[in-house]
Structure formats: structure tokens, C-alpha cells
Image 1 (cartoon, helix red, strand yellow):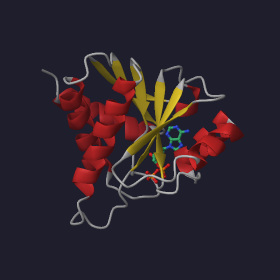
Image 2 (tube, rainbow, N blue to C red):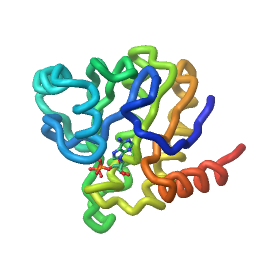
Image 3 (spheres, rainbow, N blue to C red):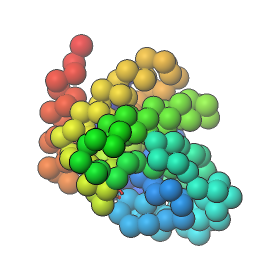
Image 4 (spheres, helix red, strand yellow):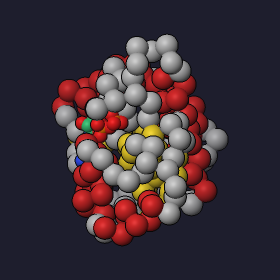
Length: 170
Ligand code: ADP
């Protein structure tokens, strides 16, 4: 099991599956969602329309179309509302459901953006701690998934993820 963090544009990664921090409509948005739709081309939106939306904390699968990644796993993170609205459990659910989907399509390599920490304003320290600990726990159930990469957009974000990863060494 290999869990690592890098600073990169997730639309450029040659992994089996990239995770998209989508919204409940699955019809595209800003941030990483917009970047993935632009890079994957218009067929991605057509495929998403057929999925009929996605609830917060859940995940759905499409092809990657023009992306280097074979699949896109669309998950909907919680909007941060102060922390008393089940945000932590919903964020953990995004990582859990995304990895379960990756395993069902035999995706060996998976990359996640920092779900909910952009427009949805989830505090980065808390979000990174949840992301790292959930992935670490869940991967034990899916030995076919060989590597998970946290694809950070900024150097600051990367530092936070690396700190969490270093705390969790066995
Ligand atoms: P959310 O609505 O779940 O908060 P955002 O897309 O607003 O989603 O932000 C999630 C994270 O994705 C942020 O840390 C943002 O900096 C990052 N991000 C934006 N574009 C990209 C990209 N091309 N590759 C990787 N991460 C990205």
C-alpha cells in the first residue's frame, strides 16, 4: 500500500482513476470540477447527465474521456457549516465510497484532490487529517488498490498533507 502527496494539476495525472470534487448536480462547476470537465472534453458532461446527480458523501463513476486517467470518480464533499452538521463523517464517506468504486473497476492507482477545502471551505488541517486516516484504514479492505496520491494544488496544501502522512507512519 502506497499513500503519497504531490503538488500537481490532477487533470495531468496518468493514474487509473482521478477523483473529482463535484457538486450534487454533477453538471460541472468551478475549481477542480471545472478543470476536469475542460480537460476531459464535452463527453464527460454527457456521461454525467446520465447519472442523475449524486448525494453528498456518495460517489459515482464515469470514463475519463480525454484525460490521461481511464476513469473519473465523482464525489460530493460537504459544504463546511461550522462542523456540527456531520461534515466530518460526510467527508470520510467521500473517501470511503470513492475507493470502493475504484476497487470495483480494478483501478490500481487513484488520485484525490483536497475534497471540500476550496469553495466548500472545509478547514484544510481537519480535512487532510480525515483524508489521510480514512484512506489508510479503507485501503486495508481493498488490497487491489496499489497507490493513492493526494494531488495538492498549492505548496501550502501539500505541506499540510505531508505533515498528516508523516504522523501516520506505522
Ligand atoms: P470543493 O467545492 O469540494 O471545495 P474546489 O474545487 O473548490 O472543491 O476545491 C478543492 C481543492 O481542489 C482545492 O484545494 C483547490 O485548490 C483544488 N484544485 C483546483 N483545481 C485543481 C486541479 N486542477 N488539480 C488539483 N487540485 C485542484
